[in-house]
Image (tube, rainbow, N blue to C red):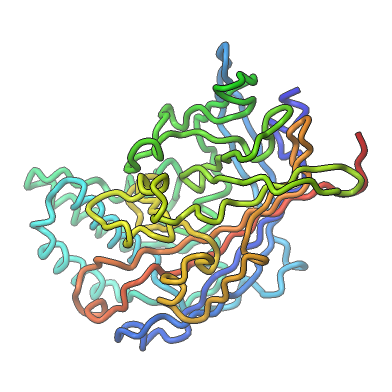
Length: 408
């Protein structure tokens, strides 16, 4: 049964639409004005998934998986050669990593030294916080020679017995996502590399777990940074939701999201002749006013500083990456901090319709946004007046739908 419902391959066609946020007022942004953004897209990809089983246990199956993507220019209204102004991802990533590890090792007293060193490195390599590049480089990456210099900086710190991590290793492993030849692109994070090991349950055990529910990732049952119970790795695989009644709510797991995503039952629908149950994403997923969400806020930040997004640094080696609803829908304090967003639940919400007996998805749309955390950055040169914010970078919408009429 597990093989038939699409364990090895995606059981229904999957399309991923990527949207990017162009910064329209770069110079003013560096002078302290809020970012004025324009969304560009979609850039459409057809996606498939492969899995290779490593081992079986009495209760679980252990495997690696890889996602593949093919760009569909015919269904994409923009060419991938379209140019856009955006944040310089390697620079933002390196600054974020530096902050994260200085905090983690309790060595922020050397922050002024690293600020000065980073300033010199940026000037030497002619790197700026903003850059204008083609979408193709955003998607598929560009060579980043500056990384070797950042690694030299880390090596210098280690001479003083400061256990700073190797930047090259961070770039190449990147939370188990490979980045080769010092090249960074969105697709490097999500596609084309084997990820794992992952461990899923093989059978239903009422009151404990469901078939195809995740048990562990990379040998761990807990996420880094989050407090209990948010740090527990669990949730259903997005291609199967357990046999029989799925209940009033369930949580899904998807490794790129680095947290559980809760869906609420909304009633029955008819989809191509098949009676389905519709679930919609819980609209309070990132609301820090709710006690059950507060364990996602870590470090010395106040709850209001964590409201509206989840910090994914623990999954991506310290990268200052934030996960949120598209256009910060439901979080007005964040979407008012930048210009150009148009949050609408009808467009930016997520839902899953499934056949309840077998637990197979018939129609699904998952829509979320990845952002850079431009807060607590070193204050020097081009960063001295920067308007701090959660900066939208890419919106990802994954859609899957069974074609044709179905009957059971």
